Image (cartoon, rainbow, N blue to C red; front, side, top):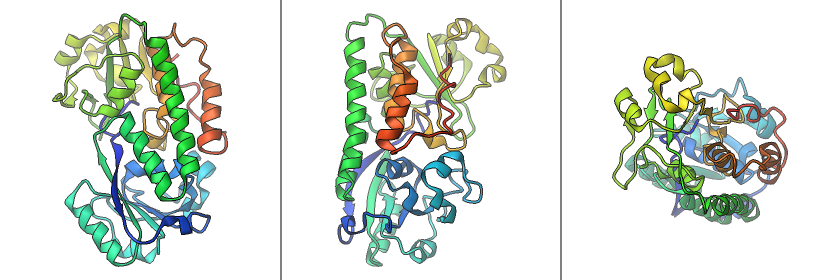
Length: 332
């Protein structure tokens, strides 16, 4: 489920109102998350179980029917409430929750006004920009946010693990002569879409892992899926979040990757929780290893993804995810 549109990285912006969150960085902290892209960051910082408000409807989630990931890592979320659409959340609901911190956005004028309003009401707001960026942008936001909310140890553990995996992958593909063509197809908002290189987070992951995407260059756009473009590219490898895509498109069988069975569904921890996909920001350290092993299996044959998964969960999430759906969805 490599999803270029849905893996917009969080670029840290210096917008922090009120006193330091360090005073509240304990079990009594009350966090409101206003937009989906910051949800993974909450778990990296160990604040997932402190969420009292989030955009449930936008995430296609329900507090009344907790997914396995929520049950494992943030059972308190059953008591959280829906704060409304990320672009126009319910301010009365937010204030009624009496949050000690709000993860907001600054990428649209409405969010900037909202942040100022909440700040005037005495609410601490950490403004983040949901936009295009690369892996380094993401690591910077994790590190910076961790320092801001007195969770530096948590954030640096994640950053260190991610950088270790990057170094490992880069060292092994340094002598690779051929970079296979990788087609990324995702369902987006219900419409099949092929991703270009403009959404640079996934583009970065694929490049680091030793692959080439359908489009290159700074000005390339994400484009709607169509037979002409895909057939012309004729990818060596296809990665998608749509297991039934072969049945949807009659011409799909003519692609080299389909003929040679190089068609892979990206792993996901919990199918009900899209942010737990290994292509998403939070699980990207694992996603990078999976991509590298998928694109260059001979170079990464010794990489045990089960062990890597256990290490990630214990390092980042403090415990293994017993209900994980990721192992067994590795496209093998």
